[in-house]
Image 1 (tube, one colour):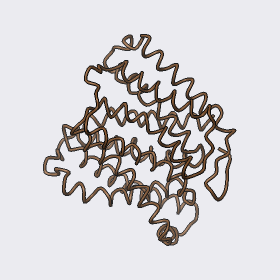
Image 2 (tube, one colour):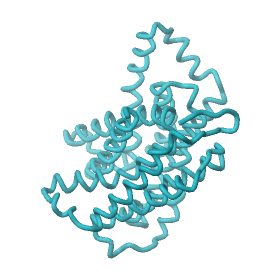
Image 3 (cartoon, helix red, strand yellow):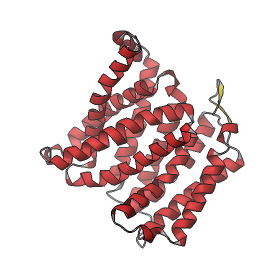
Amino acid sequence: MSSFFTLLLWAWLMASSFIVSGHMVAFASPIATSAFRFLLALLILFPVLLFSWQRAGLSKAEQFQTLFSSGQRIFHYVVISGALVGFFIGLFVALQSTTPLNTSVLYTLVPLMGVFIAKVWLKEAAPLWRIVGFVLGSIGAVVVLLSTQPYDDLQWYSGDYLFLGACFLLALHVVSVQKWGRSLGALSGAFMIMLFGTLWLLPVALIWGELSQVQWLSQDFWVTILYLTVFTTLFTFVLQQRLVMTAGASRLLAFSYTIPVWVALFTALTQSRLLSLVDWPFASGIVFLSVALFLIDGNLSKVKITDGSNSTEK
């Protein structure tokens, strides 16, 4: 049960990221915002990580050295963080030749992509009812999206090809954390992702981030960036690390289907138009999502997951 509420918290924070990130456009480019979020989150997490080692009676120098003692581990986290950064960059570039609605609809395919990657790479069993659950989840998320915003301009654009590739990278990121992240705790794993993510993003931001346009002196800039850093970067990374290890990548991806619902509810609440959601399209989307989560989450504990070398119950 605690895992269920932790997954909901993760989905709520992710939904708030989509909402709050929209306000950052007035203060900085998306690339500059992403790079600064990673860097600031890294600077905040580092002393927290050191304190956790000290509290556990561990040598900080030895623990820090252990993080980088394995070339294989470094390579793994370079790939893990690179896939995540690739998703962000792909999203920003794709939005130059497609629409936010198109990217929102295509984003619902990420869990299905994750199931495919887990099947091929981790040899994870995928019963028919579970596949049906993910398909229903994608349908439900799309129905919710289309019921809450106009879709007259919904057509295929050239940027959609790029964003499909970006979505695949995001699914690869989540599954690769499950594959390679078991040797580290949630804080250490999140630190490694932020560290190498920052190293990936900084040169990109220096070249294409339009840093001269960042509104560094604006109070709203700092309030917004601090929320995005602490709650939708730092907390979500740590939660994601913990959830992928304890609940599994598929379960985490399944709960991402609920993100459009929380975005719609929050937007309607702030605009005092909750009654606008009381219609059959939105309700039918909720029904699809509920059935999907029951099929995926309600039975996932019965599925044995293997990574090719060992198996665990999720």
